[in-house]
Length: 371
Image 1: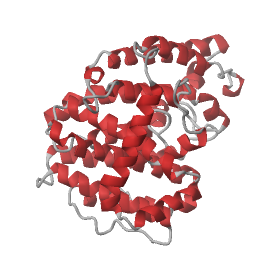
Image 2: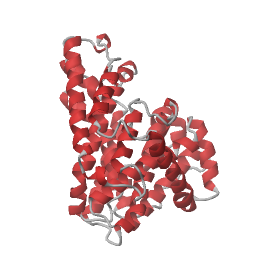
Image 3: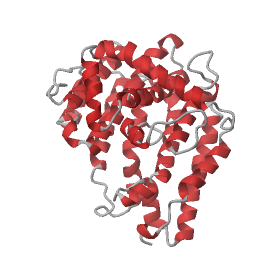
Image 4: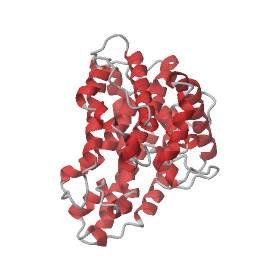
């Protein structure tokens, strides 16, 4: 069956209904409190933790330049920072990290979340603003930045303000990660970080060629189409755990992997209609191309994906993140935060909160909606 003949517009509403029923705290969750708190914390994190190191003089110039890529600084910065911080804090706590070190660790995840979103947005939508960033993230370059801690080559033409700002923030990310890692440059966790970054940038580059009109569907293509988001999400979680050992990272990995898997599957359902229209392979689009013989079988494939989403959500909702909070007085848990971002990104209603526009969410490139 030709992909363009399959009706997919009802997939999102079916998925949302199943997810809503599966999350036990959904009905009483105060979305205004969750998002309002996360965005406010993201803004403070930017102003008080990152800007002083990024550069007080550089920050307003960078923020103003975001408009050239249709990004509003007041939305596109604190929104992903709020999510990345919560995700990083959860990973750090589940890994057994010390509470007094959690803020610094989670801030690294927040910065990683923002940088990944900005990189993808400029690469996909604004290649002129992207500049020559791609040349700075080769495997050899990443080895210099991570294992050898040589950041001398991480520079960009200052006249391309967005690209130069990205590079300066990426340098700050590496500097902060080096602090977490401590003096041992080639520890097993540092090696894992290096390999994960190489994998992420390679997946991002390869994804540009995954066009429906050019690449035939295969089982391997399902993983290939999901690889950029999978690798990016793992980097966000891992960035909070660089100061811990291998056993600690292994302890948080199931949580991070399950959340990532859930996010990728939800994305594939929510985006399938647009993916097909835009000639882009997504996970569900590949599954449909391989196995849908008619509309009924297409609906069964979608339901199978939705059922896996529900199973993953239930496991996460019953897991350790459901007991953790960003701050002791918060009326919501870290799992509530992660759910709220996932739910909002999928188009679910969030009473008490007016979410950013679709264009702003795409610009922010937040993890649960699209990475």
